[in-house]
Length: 247
Image (cartoon, rainbow, N blue to C red; front, side, top):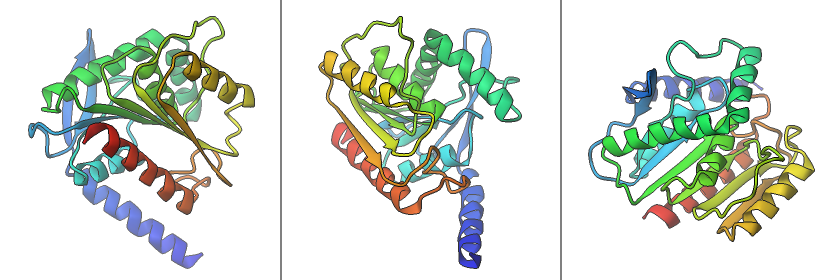
């Protein structure tokens, strides 16, 4: 237990130090000011990765992912979905605002589009861009694919897989990777089944990887759901997918 606490403290310290290397970027969706973060290699005409954070907005997991991706040779941009003045203070507020964007999925897609345009301005190769997302952001990654955004692929990491029953399945041209924890109580069996049907109907290049003994936020060291082994596997699967589609 003491070793786990020590390792966690070291991890958090590294995150705080590394987060200082991310550059704040102000951009807009219409009149709404948004505040994202970009890696220090911006402007170098490299493949780009949009990172969609979980339901509380930009967090340590998203920041750490950006810095790890920079080491792999990608320009990473951490997206602000909610906008300045709208960051939720607690889980209840996060559930409310995330629910609004899940319901109004076109607004969600528009916010992702605004971030995509900003990533291009930051020098990312426009032909080599991917989207990854955690939790609520994982839902967003799928919405980017459903919207037909010009990206090579998307990765949904413990994301919500459901969509409104009134929405028709459409062809999804971008490649899709879903990283799904086996014991995620927020994902119903029919959600997974319906997503598979959707991807098959769209003749999509897709894969779903299910991680054993893993609850919802299994990739976050700050979560009681954290599963270190499965988190490492999921990250390696993400890197393998990005290398295939972007390099």
